[in-house]
Image (cartoon, rainbow, N blue to C red; front, side, top):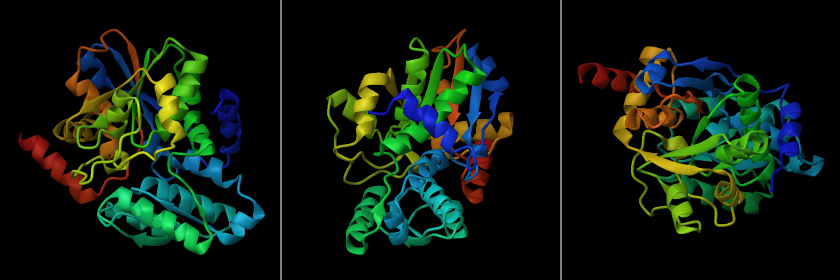
Length: 324
């Protein structure tokens, strides 16, 4: 299990590599919900995603032998950028396997950071299997996007920053895929301020953590994963993932939002908050759009997990929302 001390140590470790991201009040969402709504802007992180926090915290722990052999990972895009960036900064090689439908902005960033990119499979689950097979074949260390205590601890630094900036926070809303982000944040928040609610959000298209917590066990990913604008929180959960046990212990609940609401949330962030936010980063705002009365009178922080959205998709969303 990851402790608050592990997260505090990670906070010191990542200082040379990661940004201390701002907490910004959303006037539009605050008025909509009659609440005080703040955005933790990880879209302003070094790689435009929170993933660099856990990635760096893991990579700095590698042994000399592991660095010499290099690393490999699977990613929906943002974790791949974090590993590519970290490997470049720390001086060793990295391979990144992503699904063939990964957004162009993420693919280009991985290449820009110097990793060898492999496009494979129609889903994250297929890319993950390919990366693990290559890790065995080549002797590279596989870096999980979520199922690793150092990854979780690194992501937990967001929780510490939220409490430092907004100690009176009532609710922290977190996007959920494999659970690395919410696992770290929930440990930090619940250890420091147990009365604060930690709520996870998933798309109805890829509700694996939601279904797993409801079943009391990790359920397999859907064989045919539906298309989603929130690809960053798609995919399944490894059967032995530490994130599931942490979520069971620390997370208050996981809620689902519809794809059409996520699209609207991307637009809201762009139009009223002046922020470019990818689908997975907008699910917190989508939750408030679907349940505007649920947080009345409370102080709410939405973790805006990333801003790597393809420009044509953003333009499409803006056009459809303004013509609605």
